[in-house]
Length: 268
Image (cartoon, rainbow, N blue to C red; front, side):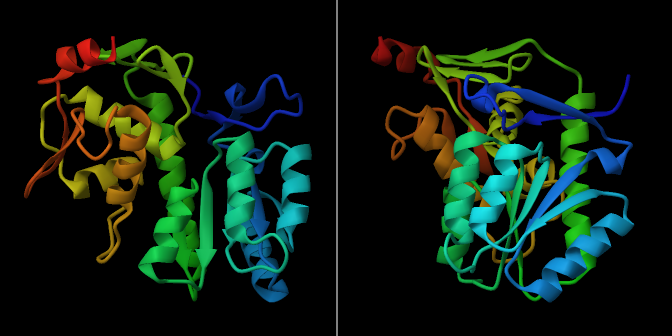
């Protein structure tokens, strides 16, 4: 079985949109194209050169507008995106990318306040690297994303996973909730699969982070909580009173099947 990267990719034709799947060989970094976006020339040039030394195919942009033009014209597999830029900032750029594609977006930010980080995840960022950082940190995050994507393609596959009125069709990469298709980010999609594969089992935040993000969680981050909240907003009838993604005090979260039938009846 060939190792391949699979993700929803931007399509040049509008009719394909977020649903088209792009594949590239995981063992060939030159086929993995990274878009680096930063208005600081020295940092952008350093990232571009360092990534190319590792064998990646790299394109670069100095602002959000140029980045979106490149993204519309080329097949991009991952975006390293600065937050603070003149004109279209990183948040706006990320939002526009999310309208077109589910490729991983890693934010590079000097804004280390919790609210800023949470905002990034609320608009669809997959990860963040606080400035200043070392290139080893960037390389580690890239490797974690590649491991996560590799795990997606190498894990025992399933056709359909369903509980209550939530159905995941992994072959089509779609999620149906109460009869309607729901768009999830790659992080949200993997999070939902992980909890639905182990229904009613409490899963710790650390386990979720290791499995979904692919590396050990550092202290002080609340990325799991943000992702859970966003996922609840998309799959629960009342996100403030969830019946599927339930908090287990002192243990983490679980996907509850206790109220599945009641939830289906309520939605009917």
